[in-house]
Length: 632
Image (tube, rainbow, N blue to C red; front, side, top):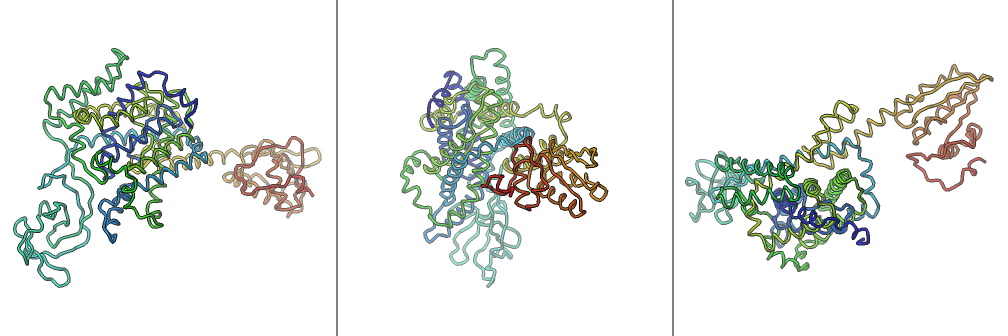
């Protein structure tokens, strides 16, 4: 795979590729970390996965300039699986904490295998079936999703009474009754605990076991929420994530100011000089202003430290986990594990490939070049496999970072390699420096990327394109925002296909003329397929037609088995009326199917040297015999 073509596309402008890679690595960190928090895994797991996937796809992928990493489109799919995995781990004979992380690794490996198979079987070519309105909807929808994700940066985590991130919990089942500060067993109504202010004490020992705060009950030892407290009792809880609140006062104003300054620099610098990458320059300037100005702004270090999640806690632990035997020793290798992870792996593989291939198409348009979709599928799969094996999370092509890379001049594979190397270097050796970069600077870069990515022309062309295309564009955008990319693309393709079928179903025509010998000829024009057979049947006046009828398909295209069935029924109806019918200019596929259905078609179909040679689009049968064997 790493051949002459790969070497040619490695770089044509080292300076642009290197600077673009550094810029993208900076923009990669907050997004990868934010999605790590969404998936409830450690940021180190996501960053390590971004490094591996980014490196392998850059070196071996089918699209130079495309940036891959631990994307949110994939991360959100694994959220429920990780939560369920944690619960399953606690039910083992030897309970395992954070078991969801080990299920995640297995799912990422399986996801990679599925993607490699998609490339081997050349499924990447099917991205060509995605209509342009779906592509526009995809771009607009993802731009909106990325914009909304940046709005979350203007919020901060609310702290609980222990100074840790407060968790949002929902009440589930009643565990204990509460009556006059007495916490009683549900069945026996025996008092188990007593409530003294905010403290819940064991009735037998008098020791404090729980603390109540904001209708949540915390275990005094683990400092975690174990119950929700309501007037009539303690309830089991479902964790719905960290409680966040919008920034207030000075901190909010500083955040907004730095974001606007970053955007202004990115907008204005190219008008003065194009020798310096605008995004990287803006990040450096805003970082220096924040540090030397003593501004109270949230930086990358604060953002990472305020997260948490399952998996690896740091690169010291990561290096120890490179002992694969130890890393994979917790996972039960059985059919139950496969059944558990397979649906998530398949969905993640599908979403990852769709986003990657559509991002590849976008890069093709921006650079007037063409990528290799099947090769990209294999590279993405290999990246995910290696990432999962060594303890990282899954990912795919990232439209935001790719647009930043292209706008910064990144065109070769070197830009993607530089992104991965810089990302790893920052984490291993320069973490103290990168931690000082204000989140506001990176948010500003992402806002400018959203402005660049969004297809503003879609508003202008909305009234100029067919209504069905406009509807598809809007629906794909909305579904991408509300649900996910895979569902949006499938919905868009289905609606486009139905609209196409409906429009073509109305195009079937029949020109009628009477020949000198009294034979009535129907000259069929237009596509004959499942959608147009009703209109096709309406063209014939079987009872009032003369005894000799001829149907000429020279200007029609018989497309599927439904069309063949319609022709068969028309012939039978004419013959039932005792009339003679002839069929002209049918393709070889059509003749074979009709001969196979009934040998009497030998006398109905007229053979001619100018018969069309096309094949049916949906032929349900495979034939090995030559046509002559059906003309017996």
